[in-house]
Length: 147
Image 1 (cartoon, rainbow, N blue to C red):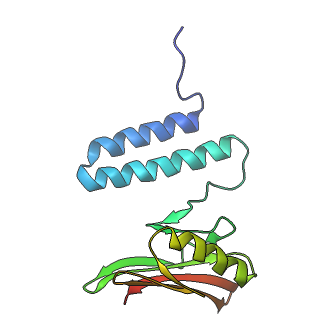
Image 2 (image 1 turned 120 degrees about the vertical axis):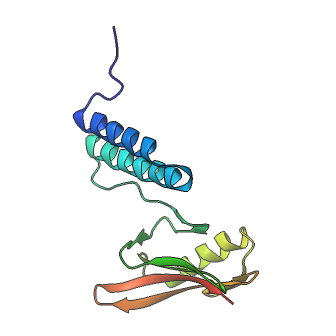
């Protein structure tokens, strides 16, 4: 008896989309399409299992994101400049700034960053974390830029 690996129409459709994308691209574009399809599968699986929230990515590049934070993807950006990379992430999160700064003091020191109080340095890069007032309310801004 043959078992169907994709029992739902959504799962089969996602697999078909993945197959077409994978065959149509090469190199770095293939890696990007695999990552995008993995996200599609995660959202599809969450919807099928009855979960209302998609899986939250806990890293942006090589920067940790505190579990209590939710990234606002429409507000951030990342690019490489001649001086180095620039990354800016906005997230909702705890109002307790002491807890957020303590988390990043601990997490970043293990990744080779030095500093405290919302400002850290590693090599030629600087990282700052601060709260900013936006039209939607208070957000955390995590900014990485060349020193």
